[in-house]
Image 1 (spheres, one colour):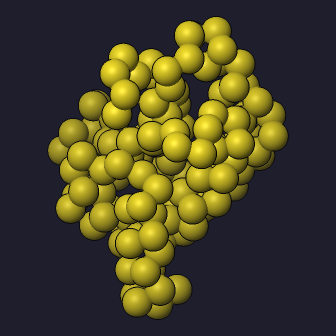
Image 2 (cartoon, helix red, strand yellow; image 1 turned 120 degrees about the horizontal axis):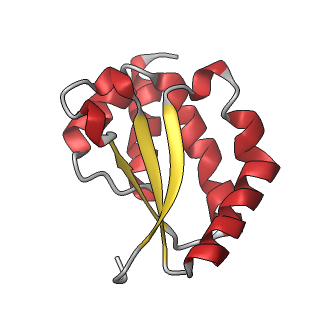
Image 3 (cartoon, rainbow, N blue to C red; image 1 turned 90 degrees about the horizontal axis):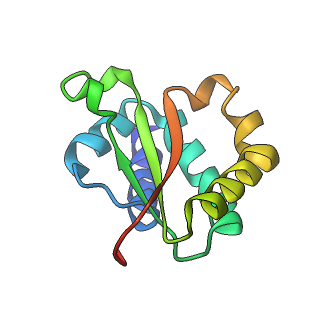
Length: 120
């Protein structure tokens, strides 16, 4: 994939995902264009299970603060109670992420869900 296509896809992902460390995350994605494709593929599946306006935050796992080779976490922000959120995550897993996470290009992406106390 050429650099301009990758840049355009990264720009598109910015509209779908919150990135607290935007500059670092965008550099990480630029080095892994296949991961950008997975993130773009993931968005409609997340919206189907949670809601179209669901906030998903991209961040680096805490264990890898200085080592961005460790992975990228897409954390779904849910206002649902824990059981309902986990049920929806299970459906996401069963209908898409279970298979997609096994594909080589999906590594090193992790998807999780957490309770969002306040509207984001």
